[in-house]
Length: 219
Image 1 (tube, one colour):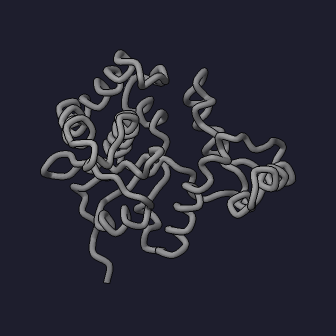
Image 2: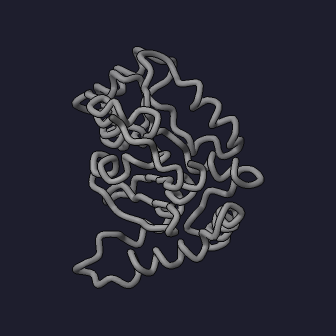
């Protein structure tokens, strides 16, 4: 018998270059972890009300997904921040050239190197949901920039490396709970303060943590 989800727990997951950055919001506040794949994320949070992941879930056999087109419309001038998910046949292609041929045969477009580079993470989500049917409906796709646009007053300038734009995102999160203090605490605890030999997070994960928190708030 499957336990009822804990509606007090929301999880946001964003890929960093070194793993899945996971932000968790529950009755006790915020926490963050780094996982090598989505399987341990699911094992750790299968009782959550939602696990929103910044990765395409549910690839088409042919053509493009309506959700990608709609997300691009929402972001307007920043539409290129949403990449078009390829058909499922591209997932197991052995090379970029082979994947590109498969995409071109099934859509009216092609395959960018950016999309090719994230296919391992797309495959990670695809395998998780194929092997764990109970994850369906809990592990769901979401795009951070679309979430921030919906939580706030529209799209935010994309450069999260700029202090002003980080502040703009934190201002949006603060409308839906005290996330600013949590973000600063987690950056200190997970990124800035640990000694190099014991640090799992990297400096570049600050952006990933911010996006993951946006997903958790949305969830």
